Image 1: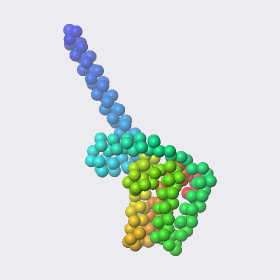
Image 2: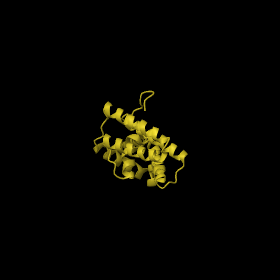
Image 3: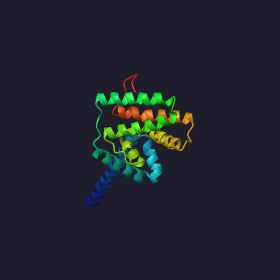
Image 4: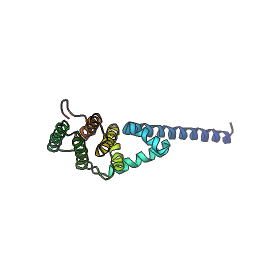
Length: 185
């Protein structure tokens, strides 16, 4: 075999190895983003129109999130918020519209205390998606009903559903992204 042929074979093998490594890296990045963002990954793909644009957006979200000063709540703050949530739920029986509005304010207050910026719904959703992508649809649904409630267009059953949706994100935020101990919300 001539030296030129040997060099050509070596170059071809190196190129194939590099392409395989690049593809494997892309697949691993995609899987990591899918695991981290959950259903929010597919929502981003649909919204952005391509996986590449969605993945770029999700990585930008991660960078912004990493720059935030998200903190865990001390036990005293968790107890205070849990007590306030109980009060909001009790209020639902007599004043469902007001309870849903209060649940929204309480979730926003909790986000703020944890260190999440609370300006603008889209920015809230973007910031929350990094650690809470699996419960973000709950927040979207609850927020939508809350808006309709403000216009007196939501049924009691929709308001009840909004409370359930708010509780999903509230519980996750309250317990620093972890599942709460049994019997505690």
